[in-house]
Length: 415
Image (cartoon, rainbow, N blue to C red; front, side, top):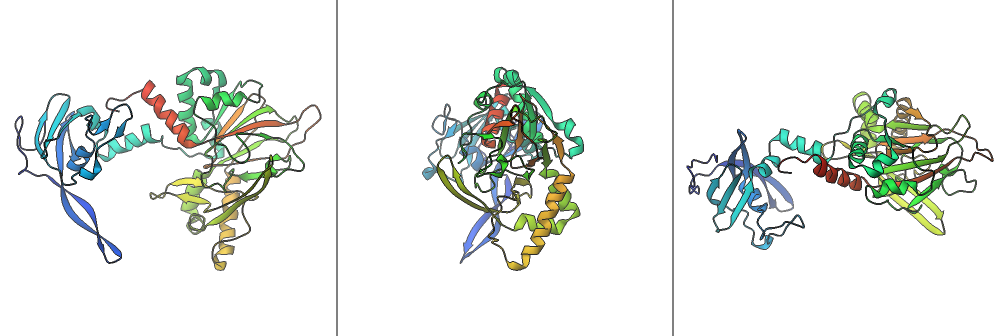
């Protein structure tokens, strides 16, 4: 039913329902928030009375004049759009509602479609966590075995259910392992192709990780590799790292260190608020200068160690001692306090880290903008030279594939 004083079809222009919205008025060079009233439609769906603003309903009309069904795109002519549009008549059936607007345009909405897009906070949260991005769960190194899910290469390549299971768990915890990978330098392509495509950098579409004496990258040395994120000097930094172990060292070294920075950040925010604040506000200049395969590069990017969104949630971690530039773009008085905070962040991540050594046939997959990763020193022998094949992916591609699989394997009514 439509909760707007009507029986069947009623002219409702005189029975306006109001909600408070915000309007920005320009006064000289300042913008002032003022409150005014706009109209909403109340619709009962599955026993719940839901509210939908008139302007939102008209903007989201699904008719062929306003929405292209195969392109899934709005084609409404915005130059003719009326922000103060009003419904003239409203009719509801068991499964849909029809709105006739004051300009004569007719919009039809399925109730399930409207219910899925409800403005109720609980519904919006459910949409965010099930379709937009699964909610992350932080972890301490002591709990690594509980969150470190293991998946089979061939199952991922051939089964959508296995692919979804891997990507869903990986998106939540930021780390996973793919086992039984073929002994081939191109095997990682089979995983990437199931998702989208690699993130190409100045190190190529894929890269080889093994000891190289005269290298442009300290990750290619067999020395102790301090915990870091890859490529913090990229404004559009690769979100995911895949490391396929072709040959693992037989020495005691070569273990990976992994730490969930989201856990560390939450800990610092509570226990060390001043240091936390410095790491979220102080810009750092990240750099990489060199030559790879004949291509010279000089990368610079400025961003804090801890990047937050408008909800104060962590969206990216930047951390690499080798790739932190020598130019400090902040005031001189903040230098020493920042170094103290930086050192604390590193020490805590080491304290909270987990250790894990891959074996031949494993692909270690981890969130490059959430986890710090490192490796302890190892030794090669002539018949046992450690070798990994690496590739990067963007989170945009992973979340896109997750949504496609969600719609295919577990669709919700109205999605």
